[in-house]
Each structure stands twice: as structure tokens, then as C-alpha cells.
Amino acid sequence: MDGPDGRRADPGSARAWPLLGSLALLAVVNLLNNLIAPGQYVLWAGLGVVGLAMLARADGLTGGEWGIGPVPPRAARAALALAGATAAVLLAGTQLPGVAEAYADERVTGMSAAQVAGAVLVRVPLGTALLEELAFRGVLLAMLARRHGTGRAVLGSSAAFAVWHLAPALGLAAGNAAVGSALGAHPAAATSIAVLAAGVAGAVLCGLRIRYDHVIVPWSVHVTANSGAYLLAWLMARA
Image (cartoon, rainbow, N blue to C red; front, side):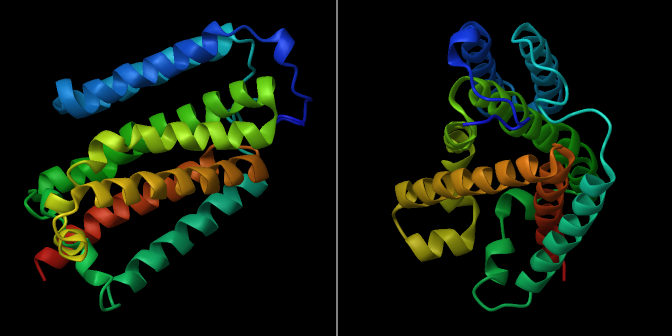
């Protein structure tokens, strides 16, 4: 099976340590972001991006293989169109009974205007989305595709993306009133659903990366979804 760049997978020509090193690096960054020093989130994300770029180079990947470099016009158009569609879906959700309540997230509604601006303009696009797209739809997807082909690469990258979201998902039921009400005293169910949803989202984002041959497309969707949710939750709490 071919990789994202169209080359046929060749497991025998690839060394194991760059892939294992990438997974270990992401595990460390995840612990730093969620448990050890979350206040330095953007710093850890930036260092993670640098480390992943070094490991990608050590694995012999070109920028094109992991989805960076000049943005093709087709990818730029898709990024704008899909970001707009994502924003429209988020706005529509605020008007739907049973869905609008899910925006009432205590982790966001207690934030100041400056904190929300920092999250929407810096933390999400330059921390969360940039790191995650370059990691899971960029470097890991390319490394796995080189060794095992595109299909298994998408599965492996999406599974890793799901595990990546385990720590932040642990407090979902407590922080979101709608989720807590729906699942009652079953925080494990909320965590499992959130992790599964992350895996599915990861597969969809992999599909966008492969279809348009650039990480800017999944990055634009990711930024719009996360930043839009932050902003709408904050605005609705003050309406």
C-alpha cells in the first residue's frame, strides 16, 4: 500500500528509533501539558514541534512527506471553505436544544476576556492545533505510512491521537454540565466517549491531510473547531 506521498511502503528500509522517539516525545509533552506544568502549554508545544521536526529529518522524511511547505492553491481553498463550514456548524449548534447546553463548560465560562483571547488566538492555533496536526497528521502519519502503508498509518495515528486526549478527557463530566447530566455518575463513560470521538476526529483529519496533501487543511478545521467552541462558550455564558 502506498504512503501519503504516493510512494510504496518499505518497512525494511526504515529504522525504528525515529518513530519510537516521536511517540516518547509526545508522551512527555502530554504529561507536561496536562499534569506537570500546564501553565507553560505553548512552550511545551513549541519544543514538541522542534523535536518532531528533528526526528522527521532523522527518519529521512522530506517536508512534503509530512505535509508542510508551500501551500497548493487547492489546499488553501479547501482550508478556507472547511473552516467556514466548521464555524457554521458551531453557530448552528448554539440554536439547537440539547446541543446548546454542551457549550456550558465551566473550564471556559470562568475565564476572563484576556484569557479567552489568549486561548483563541495563541494557545489553540499555535499550541494545540499546530502541535497536534504536525504530530499526528504530519510526522507520525508519514512515518507509519512509510513502514506500513496509508491504511494502517491512519489507524495508528488516530489511535495515538485518541490516547493523547485521555488526560484532558478525565475531567470532562465534571467540567461540562450537559455531559455530566447525560451520563450521571459515570465519568468513565464520558472519558471513553471523548477518547473514542478524538480517534474518529483524528481519522477524519488524516483523510483531509491525505486528500489535500498539506497539513494546513486539517489545521484550519482544528483551529476553527477549538477556538470557535472556546469563544462561543464564553459568549453564551454572558448572554
